[in-house]
Image 1 (tube, helix red, strand yellow):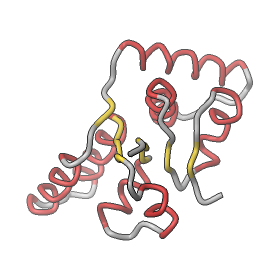
Image 2 (tube, one colour; image 1 turned 90 degrees about the vertical axis):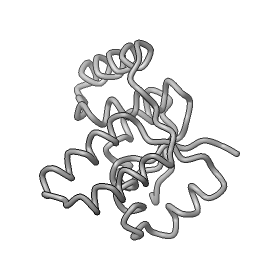
Image 3 (cartoon, one colour; image 1 turned 30 degrees about the vertical axis):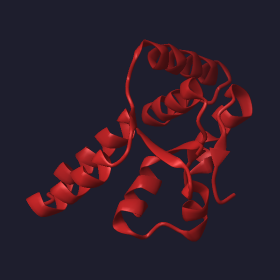
Image 4 (tube, one colour; image 1 turned 135 degrees about the vertical axis):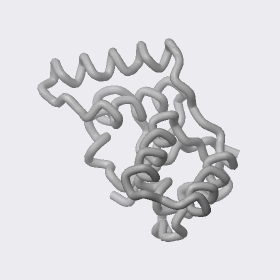
Length: 134
């Protein structure tokens, strides 16, 4: 069994039961990881969108079934390297995308995302492995 990380967009569609077929094919038979960033983004959505207790509990249960790549010093160092190099290339990336990329690169785990263009610079320059529809 291989490991894959799912981006927040994929996590959202999976937990809603609306992910495209290629996502299911990319994760089938693999251990599916979340990053601490994706968990935070999903929790933010529950607040901003005023989710009720039942819906929040369903999401909590869905998250609990998956391992999470946590923040640690090596991920922080990787984030700093990625963010600095992207800035020097004139291609600064959003902070959360950079954190997700740092988690994946540090753990050497591919990222499944619908937003491959958001992560392409990291794939082209820093070794991020992307699995997407493109």
